[in-house]
Image 1 (cartoon, one colour):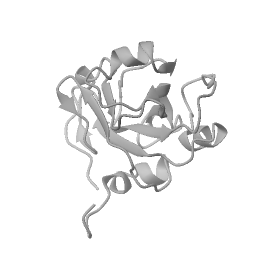
Image 2 (cartoon, rainbow, N blue to C red):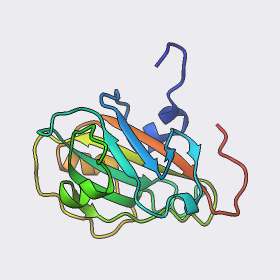
Image 3 (tube, rainbow, N blue to C red):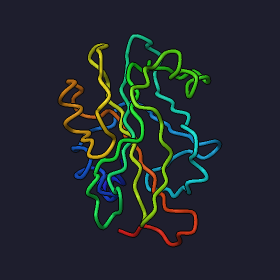
Image 4 (cartoon, rainbow, N blue to C red):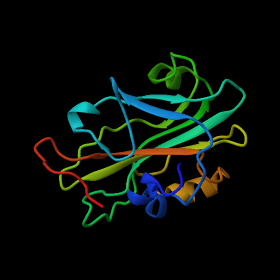
Length: 183
């Protein structure tokens, strides 16, 4: 980032509330249809009903990643007592720049531990955060007993994932909501 610019993950309180400070070290793209997720962009529930296409830069198929998608604002930003709500958990994702990386790769190569649940916020503007970790090795990961109160930091510690290597988030509110998140 250029000197003097502000990290959108800090401004959006992703760093602090969900993850610790880290240096992004790998290209990471999340795309719903033709809309690429950019930090802080707004998407409506009708734009995110199906799991997105995920691309991880690089070409070493011997490197694997774990990705989590969480909502730190559930059930509402003013009362986030389900923080973090787990929307998706995939492990053993190979590093690749191939054009076919996305939905099909998870079914055949990645290991979907918790299936994708589309965002459906009912109150306020929610942040939906994708966090990518580089795995030190392939290992068995167990699905949590429930989606609410997932903790990305504790999960990373439990499975020795270290700090994230990339992250991106979008804002979402119910279809009839208006306005945007201001910082």
